Amino acid sequence: MSWQSYIDDHLMADVEGCHLTAAAIIGHDGSVWAQSSNFPPLKPEEVTGIMNDLETPGTLAPTGLFLGGTKYMVIQGEPMAVIRGKKGTGGATIKKTTLALIIGIYDEPMTGGQCNMVVEKIGDYLIDQGL
Image (cartoon, rainbow, N blue to C red; front, side, top):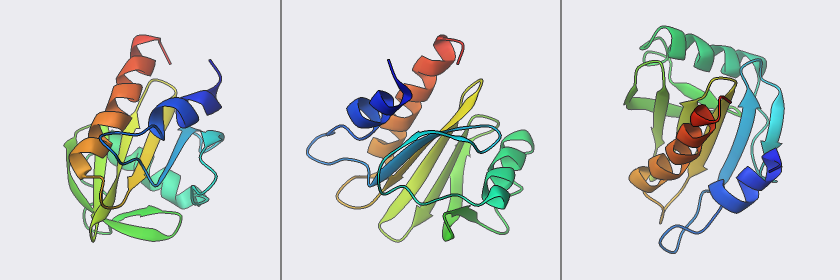
């Protein structure tokens, strides 16, 4: 399966009548493996901040999570595995796999829980595949 099909067929798929606003799979070095057409370009320092927070949980909390210049308030995630962010009625979920970061961005009517489920399910699958 191509990386783009993970985006198109799984991350951007309909979930209970709604879907992610944008999604991407990027390498730990910030290289884009696949993304939805409207995924915001990430700045190198944003990827560095994400990787640092996954290594040392809590480092993003004081400054916020930035994705494509948009700031999200960091909310409870899973240390060294998942970062969750909230902005207004939307937010983002980032799941770390062995080789990549799975990023999902959502807005209403999708909920944070639905976004978490979609992103983390694909992330867990890729981890099981050694990716």
